[in-house]
Each structure stands twice: as C-alpha cells, then as structure tokens.
Amino acid sequence: MFGTLNYLVLLLYLAGMIGIGIHFSRRQENSEMFFLGGRKLPWLAVAMSMYASLTSAVTYIGLPGTAYAENISLIIVSFMSPIVAPFILLIFYPLYHRLRVTTSYEYILKRFGAPAKYAVASLFLLARLGWLGTVVYAPAMAMSTVTGIPLWICICMMGLLATVYTALGGLAAVVWTDAIQFIILIGGAVWVSISLIQGVEGGAGAIIALAGETGRLDIGDWKINLFSMTGPAVAISFFFQLMQDYGTDQITVQRLMATGSLKKTVKSVAFNACTDFFIIGLLMFIGLGLFAFFQNTELPAGITPDKTMPYYIIHYLPQGISGLLITAVFAAAMSSMDSGINSIATVLISDFTHGVKNEVRLARQLTLALGLLATALAFYVSTIGGILKAFFSFMGMFSAPVLALFLMGALTQKGNFKGWLIGLGASIAVSIWIQKFTPVHELYYFPASFFVSFSIGLIASRFFQPPEVPSGLTVWKR
Image 1 (tube, rainbow, N blue to C red):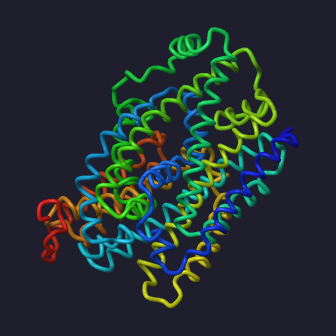
Image 2: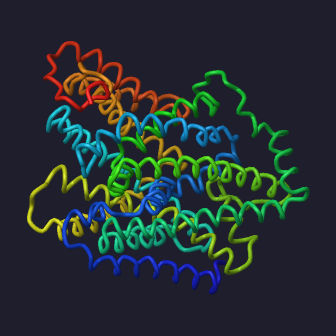
Image 3: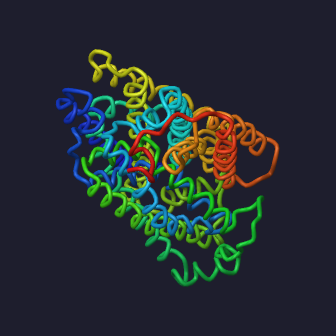
C-alpha cells in the first residue's frame, strides 16, 4: 500500500501547487497578464515549463514501458530534438515575434484569412483535448495501481487539482509550477535509475548486456517496416511531430512568446533540446533496468509495461522516497494538464471571442469548464489501450494537418486554404483507415497524415486562384 508518509509527501506537494495558484491570482489584471505573464517571464523558467508541459506522464511512464516491452528505438527522439530546433527558429519564430502574436493561429489569420484560422484553431482544440484526456489518465492509472484507489477516483482527483491552480493564476502560475515540476520529474528519473543500477546484480553493465542479448538495443535496423518500431519510423515521425510541438502548437508558442524576444526564445529552445537529449536516454535506460530487475522477480497479473515503473517505485523503494517519486509522476501529468487547459482557453478567447468584456473572468470560467471536460475525456482514453497509442492517434488525426498548413504558408507562395481543405479531408480519411483497419505501427500515424495533407493540399491549391501574399509572411519575403 501507499502508506501514511507517502500520502503526506503527496499532499504537501499538491497543497504547494494550489498555493502558487493563489499567489499569482492577485496579479491577473488583464488578458495580457493571464495569457502571457505580461511578456516578461524569465527564459529559463519558460524553458523548464515548455519541457515539463510536453514531457507528460505519457512520456514519463510510456517511454520506460516501451523500452521494457520492445526496444529503445525512441532514443532517436533525443537526437531529433536538436536537429529540429534550427528549423523552427528559422521558419516560425521570426514571424511570430515580428507579428507579436498571442496565439500561433494569428499568423494563419494574416496569411490565409479568418476561415483558415478558425479551422486550425479548431483542430488544435480537438487534438489537445484528446491529449489532455491522455495525460490525466496516465498518472491516474499509476496511482490506482500503486494505492488500490479506484481508477475513477484517481482520474477525478488529478484532473480537478490542476484545473484549480491554473484558473487562479493564469500562465504565470502555470510556468512557475511547471518549473518546480520539471525539477521533481528530472530528479525522480535520476533516483529511479540509480536505484535500478544498485538493485540489479552487475549494475549498469549487466542491464545493458541483457538488453543487447534480448534485442532491446537493436536500433540499427534501418529497413522500412510499417508494422514495428524501427529507426526510420522514429526519425521520420518525430522530425515532423517535434516541428509541430515546438513550432506551431499553442502550448509551446504561448510560452516562447511570453519571453518577449527572439533572443530569449532561442535560449529556451536550446535548453529544451539539450534536456531532451538527456532525459529521453535516461527514461529508456530505466525501461531496460526494469526489464533486468524483473527477470528474477515475478510481476503480478495485470501489471502491463505502462504500469511497471510505478509498481517498482511503490514496492521496491522505501516509504517517503516512493512518495516523492510518485509525486514526480503527478508532476509530469499536472505540468501538461495545466499548460493544455491554459493554452486552449487562450485560443478560445483570442481566436474565437476576442474583444469580450472582462476576458480574465471568462478565461477562468473556460479553464474550469475545460478541466472538467479533459477529466471526462480521460475515461474515454482508458478504453483505447496503451497510452502511447492513444497519444499518437489524437496527434496524427488532428495536429499533422495543422503543421501542413503552417508550412504551406511559410514555405510557399501558391499554397492556399481551399487546397489545404481538400488535403485535410484526405488525411482524415487516411488516418481513420490506418488506425482502425490496418496493423500499421502507431509511429506512422503522424507522418502519414502530414504527407497526405501537405502534398494533396499543394496539388489541389493549383486549381484555385490564391490571394496575393502580404510581404513578410513567408520565409522568402521577410
């Protein structure tokens, strides 16, 4: 069982998060403060928040589970992040800072018009609401496994808590709670890895040797295989997925615009890429360590790879320490939950209802409603099976076409919204077919959807007369 000391550690952490929300609630005089922290937030705190937001419990629990069950092909993601960083800094952020956007979709408004802005903003809402359900479900599953509390209670507890402090303190509360959560989740991963090295006879060498013997280090298979996780699948999928996450997704754009300058944005992106390189490798190693540890220790029925890490924490680490590390799982989830509902509220107000009276009050009301909706969606995610598959399903269906329109706008003169709409319809049809009727590995969901929407969108654009592109809205005419 979880134990009294562990509950005390967890409750103190949760109370601290609420306290930060209350502290910043007194500073939310206007929408600029609520949505962007007055564009004066420190770049390092923003960088930590950006990383913590996108490193959800899907990553924190899912990556070790993947290494445990399959292989460490996802280690390639740690190399893709530094590769993608220059692309997003050259293509997107000079445009955003020059336009002083609040949401990334304001660029789409200027490039393609209001219907295009509403379309991509709506796709963002669909993708991130599904994603929010995933990041609530993952830690709730972990808590249910390690404490015996029914899953539905865990889901409600997790979803509502992050909603409260986000509604109180706006982006400033989100960024500073995320910075604390960043430290907790990094420290937790380091602690678990050290514990596994000490708990496996032969230490790190034995862990790596066993991983090699069982094929878990086989990332050298660079043949295209649509039905398994291989090097090309990871590299192709995450090149485009990271470009979407860091270049066009409002969760990241909102934070980077809050730094107030392109120079600080560059620092934040560089910090995030370096952290990605470290933490993804560490989480992969934890998965291999868990595989080695449980070779001679029987796991109970029902402990799937996604649940192995929290099971190890609660059953093989001392009281207090295990509470801190389960808190790290909470930190990973709450940092994504708070960022998601804050960004969705920002898009709804800035892109759909801009100009209403008392935007801060409306933002808080929307935040509460979105938190309740995301909590409800977590119950649906629990029926999909596998948190990484749920994540790739939502992002491939809705986010890949958004990236396609941004790149059509920034890189081409002739790409237009009507052509993109045809590409969007084709990509949704292809996504449904791949996900529901084929055994194609989920890593291919995102690139397949992107390539269909981008290529068909460009081809179809030739049949429509595009409006003249204003100067400064493509990389060719800045």
